[in-house]
Length: 241
Figure 1 (tube, rainbow, N blue to C red):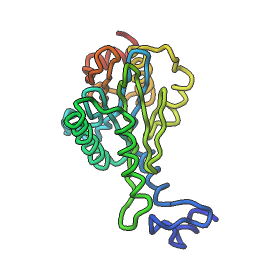
Figure 2 (cartoon, one colour; figure 1 turned 180 degrees about the vertical axis):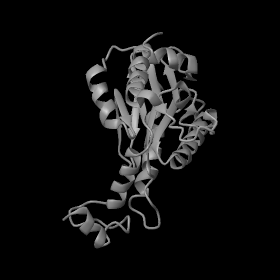
Figure 3 (tube, rainbow, N blue to C red; figure 1 turned 90 degrees about the horizontal axis):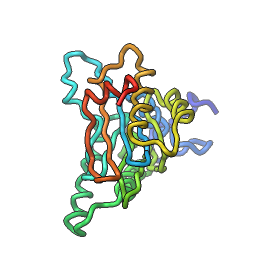
Figure 4 (tube, rainbow, N blue to C red; figure 1 turned 135 degrees about the vertical axis):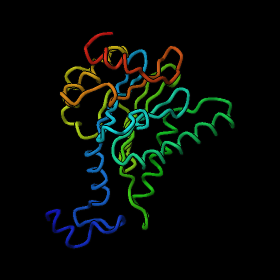
């Protein structure tokens, strides 16, 4: 049965209704929304974990600093997203509150997988409850737990996986191919930034400029989330640093 026939029969009108071949069409539409979003890359390196994202400024009058695509969840955790960014902001703010509650209650930083599972639990609830729509966003969550860099990807279904390197958004097929060819287990963060920013530059071509790229990292050494400066973004895009 073709997707158009599914739509004509109404299987895409309710989130709780499976199509005859076992698909939730509203969830699949949410995944398509992610694939239309701006590109975000995460790479786990031996000395930390990095996030690089395209802010895709569509209006030259927009102040680039006002566009948030990478967020700090806790001192040792950051995140970026692709898809409906307003959906992402709601989930990130929930994660920030959870991280602070953990510090107040247990006097210790929260582990990354607890953040990931909480976000995915909420995403999953919206795939089985009437009156909701799925979150139209995938989120990359990166940080350092007990000296180990970790990178997770969550999708609209509520599924999550841990990755060595991954990409979401409109340029996923092209950059994924680059990551498969060039990622190495012994890469440091400088190598990772050169790979991620270089891949983004290759895809954006003439549209590449440091103002539309956000980059951040958490190092194993001090477990502190930090943003990369625009000067460093430019240097890495030229293969320097």
